[in-house]
Figure 1: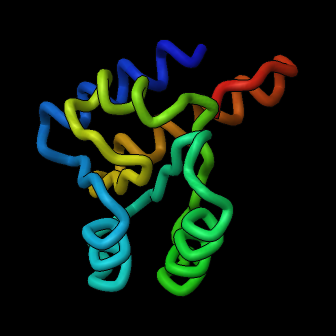
Figure 2 (figure 1 turned 45 degrees about the horizontal axis):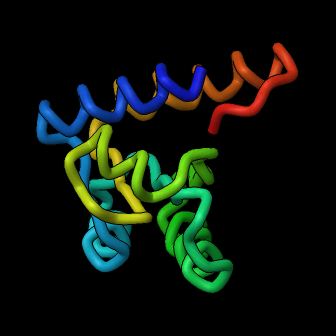
Figure 3 (figure 1 turned 30 degrees about the vertical axis):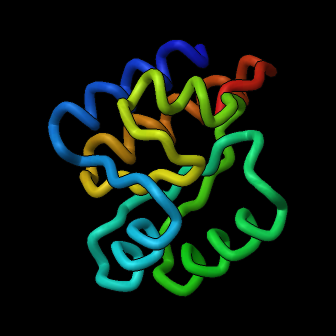
Length: 109
């Protein structure tokens, strides 16, 4: 299932719907452009806490992906531990995939 997430993120990146880096993602959330914030498994706890704060303020979901920054970078072509998805369709698909994995008892996002 993790491959599906990374594949979907790669597709969203090619469509120009993914931003990388904390500052860009936080600004997109503040501007109302971000629909979903994603964090790599290996980012610091402080960065994740700050990302969750920005997500709560913007009233959008924030999810920690069970993939390290290197895998996210390979899938998306962006070397960043924090990503923002700016498209509603891609964000819904990622969240639905997360829920499907939860129901099966696995770990994906």
